[in-house]
Image 1 (tube, rainbow, N blue to C red):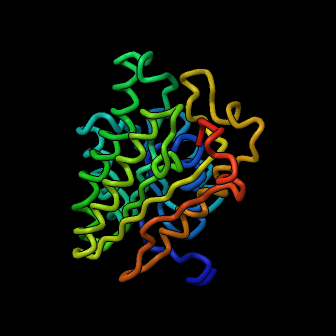
Image 2 (image 1 turned 180 degrees about the vertical axis):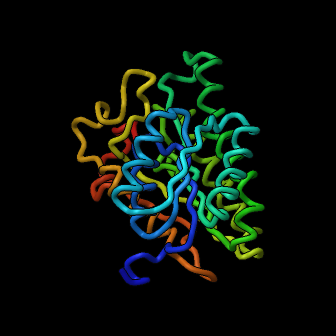
Image 3 (image 1 turned 120 degrees about the horizontal axis):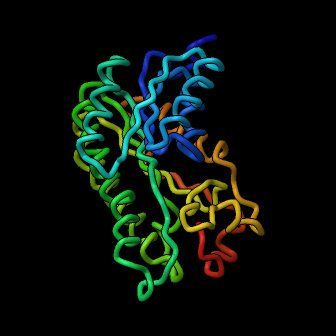
Length: 255
C-alpha cells in the first residue's frame, strides 16, 4: 500500500459513540485509511467485538475504551488512555449523540436532561479533554451535528437545539484553535439509518422506513474526507443530505 492508499498512516483517531451506526462506520474507515483507532462508547462488549473486526480487516492497533461521555472524569481518562497506549491523539470524532421524542410541553425533565447531557455536555467534555492533545499533534477535531442544526425543526425543537449548539460550539472553537494549527470540522447529515432513538422504541431505521436514507458508511466517508485534510487546510462545514431533502424537509420531523 502507498501513502495515497493510507493517508492517515502513523496517526491515531479517537471516536466517541463508536459501538454502532456512524461512529462504528467511521472507526472502520479511519482504520482503512491507516489510522490506529480508539473506540469509545458505553457498550463494552460491542467495542471489543468491533476492535477485533478492525484489527483483523485492517491490521491497525485498536483500543476499546468504555466511556460515558456525560462523565467528565471518564472522558479525561479516555483521552489519556488513548494518548498513552496509542502514542498520541491526532484526530477526534465527537459523534456520541441521542434523540428523545416528545414535545416541549410533554417531555419529562429527566428525558430532556438525558438528551442535553449527551449531546451538549458530552460534546463539550470531549472537546475540552481532547484540545491539549490535539494542540501537540496539530490534529483535527470533527463534530457530528445534523441537518436539524441548520433549519428549524418544529417537531424536534429540543434535539434540534442541541445540534445548533454543536455547530455554534464547533465554529467558535475553529476561530481560535486554528491559531494553534488545530483543524475543526462540523459535519451535518440528514437521515442516516442508525440506532439513534432506539431508547424511545423508534430507531432511525424505523422512522425512515419510507425515506431513502443514507447508510452509516456513506456518511462516514464525509468524516474520513475531513480527517484526511492536512495543515494548513481544514473542512469547516460539510452537509450531507438527500438530493430531494429541500423539496420536502418541512414535512419530515426526523433527520
